[in-house]
Image (cartoon, rainbow, N blue to C red; front, side, top):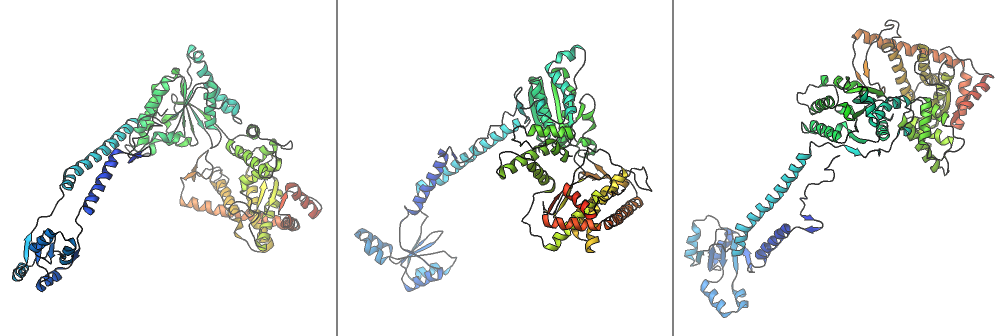
Length: 640
């Protein structure tokens, strides 16, 4: 645990606890004293500042009788020194003020000035500048030493603070959770039964280490949890510590790394030293890829992350598994980890925390809705069926959004409609009923979505249509067609991939068929359709020329989705040209097929689109009912 979490460097502010420090009072008093001496102790006289030429003109006129010379200025008086003494002896201040005037000017190097004074009989003499003794002492001795003292105190405090912080750089920043107080058990984890089974042995070893050491066995030193974001890797680690009832050290991989080289390695040493002192315990390193990236791609010779990784490898080799220190780590990028981390003796076991299946999603929904008041009509099995591909975090968010919608609608319980609306909000975006769309665009959207729905209905193996809507959602979606799978699918055949392309092209085909022109509304559909066609050629070996040949065009992360990949083309430009041409051929061929398919069912398109323009939303049952009414029977499903 970070012992310096609550420690702060000494305050360098001029006041503490709302009161000024004595040093600041001393500085303020000195400045006030200087101000008083300069402005209040100086004699108050009527002095006129003139330029040097006017000063000489007053001498020639005989107005100035006496000149007092200093290095900084010349002062001219209208009475002589003798007359001034007489007036001063009479103690008549009014007479003095009336008769004596003073002119001050800046001295100029003029050789004829003294001759002018002599010719006019003007008294002149040099005077040293008058200094106040107290002010001289303050400015010469006290203030410089006081300033040096203040600077010395500030610098000493600053250096002391830096020195104290420097001594704590190497201490780790783990959060230590008390024994059995992680707030999680295996009962709190749903939808990951296989992963929990792998971790039961770790819990059993921490509870009964003698059973394993007596037979000569050893528990794995490290367990690496890999999976997509939101699948519950951190929750599983907390559940292991909670079930075992041992101390739980938790730290993120990025917290090892600082700008100073060597700090991360020092923190690793300190972490393992604390863990050995509190054994049996669990060390959990979240986001291990922050410090565990492969060293083969690092060109730096003195990289802080590399030193931290080296120290982690040494520590994992250096401690005995029988001491009861277990290392758990989590990452969603196992492909970038250094091979030395994954060898036996370090992270011996890798536990994949995968996305939940239908039964797992239902268990997660039941777990998160345990404290939510659900209506009797809510069918969590149906919600789980609709949410294929959702992880635990997504399902928790779904339940929360449904509860919020119920409160917003003024209900005391959550109904099925709340779950349906929350699902559409997470998938398609927030509904925007107030967005104004002109009638022409609204009609195009209606026929576009009808084309998707009808193409899905007429394509063998396509997911059934659940809902059609022309209500705008999200940032740019003016409408959407919702299809839901009837079962979990892990493989797709070549015909089914072609069928997906057909459904994606159905919207644009309907636009061209009805309006004899196309719009920009199919941009996202074309992107997805081209991606499927391209992957059929490069990844799945489904092209005529490169049948059963894998053409790697990108290295995709297995857990971060299709949008996280790096380009790594390993074929010629001629092959790339073939891929582009073949992709265009597939798209054009499927587009012509969909056009012909929709042309055969033109009456159904018009019937559904006109109904959609009136009600804006059609569910799956209403969609099928309109198809039956349009021809008297349901159209035959195409072969694909």
